[in-house]
Length: 567
Image (cartoon, rainbow, N blue to C red):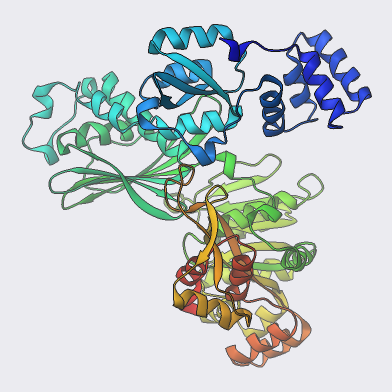
C-alpha cells in the first residue's frame, strides 16, 4: 500500500528540529539513547517527554501524509467495529472506525506496521486505509466499543439447561460445581472489568419480578447497563459470594466481604455487600480503584484561593479539622488527599476507618470492628496511647467519639474527621447537638470544610449554548452578571452521550478565627456566624459551584442539583 510507504526516522527528526520542537542537542541525546536501547526513535522521544503522544501523532501524520483522527470526537461506527474481535483489536492496538467503498478505515498508532496491516486485511478481506491516533485514545475506544453485555449473555447461556430451568429460583441451592463453571466465572469477571473501564464506583445486582437488573453508578448517577434472565441469578450471586469469602448457603442475613480483582495492569479492591429483598438476594459491589484514590488536593476541585485557606488549616500543628457533607460528597477522598500532604516520616499518623478502603505506606490504619469491640470511640481512645501526631477518624457519629476527638485536638494532636451536615455552620450546630460544650468546640476547631461532588462537562463535546431559564437565573442571581450561553456537553462517545465526564468537588472552607470563636462561645445564631465568615473571606458552596460554572467546568444544573437544598 502506498499509504504505508514511509520515510526514515531521520526525516521525522529533521521535521522536529526545523519546527523547533526539539533542539539539535536533544536530538543527539535521543539518537544516542536509541542506539543503546535499540528502541524506536518515537518511543525514546516519548520516554524523554520531549513530545506528548498527540504531538507525536500529528508529526507522524504530516511525515507520512496519513490523516490524524481524534477518536474522542469522531468515535467508531458499530458496523466497522464488528469486523474484528476485541482480542484482535488489543493484540494489534488498532480499532476499525468506518467502512468506505469496500475499504475499512483503521485507526492505529503506527501505520508503518506492514505485518499488522497485512493480517488485518486478510481477516477482514477488505482493503485497509490506516489513519493515525494515539495509543491511549485507541485503547479507550476499544474499551468503549467492545461492551461485555453480549459476551456475558453468551457465557450464561452455556450454564446447563437443567439448572436454568429450575422454577424455584429464589430457593435454588447452588452446587460448588455450578459456581466453578467457566461461564459463570467468566461472566462475573467481564461484568467487573467493564465496570472498571466505565469508571463505575458501584455495581448493583438486583433481582426483579421478571428479570435480573444490572446497574452501574458512574459519576454519582445510577444507570441500567444490562438485563439478564432471572434464572441465572443464583449462580451469579453465589459466584460473587465465593470471590468475597461469604457464606453461599446464607441467603436471609446481610453479609459483607472483600475481593481483590486482577485487571491485568493493576489490582482493584472491591467491597461486597449482600442483603435479602422480597424478590431475592441483591448485591452491591463497591469498586475501590487505586488509580483514582490518591489524588493530590489541587486535583479534587479546590480553586487556588480556597486551597490556600485549606492548606493554612492543615499546616496547624494541632486542633481539629472537620469535613462535612452527605454520603457520596467525596469526604473520604478529601481526607486521603489531605493525609497525602502530611509528612508520614517525621510524624506518626494513625487512621481509624470503617472500613479501610485504601492502604497507605508509612501510615498506621485501624479498622472499626464492632464485633471485637472496636468502634470509632474505642479506637480513638486506644490510639491516644500510641503517641500519634495526626489522627484521622473516618466519621464522628456519636457523643463519645466527638468528646474524645475534641480532647485529642486540645492535647496536641491534629485530628481530621468528617460529620454528616449540610454546610460549615450547621457542622458547628451538629457538634453541639452531640453534647459538646460551645467553648470546647471553639477551642478545638481549626476549620471546617463543607463539600459536594458535581459532574464535569465533557471536554470532548463541550459547546456554548443556552440553558433552561431557571438555571440561567440561578447563575445570574449569584454571580450578579447576565449571561445567555453556558458551556455544556452535547454528548459523545467519550461520555456515553451524557455530556459529563468525571467529577470535581465544590467547597466551602471556614477558618475558625477569633471573631468566630467568640460567636461560638456565646452561642450566636447560624446566620450571624455565616455572615461573619463571609465577611472574613469564606466562599459559599453555592458561589464556588457557580464560579466553576463560569469557568466552564460544570453546569448550573449540576450546582442546583447538588446544592440547591441548602442555598
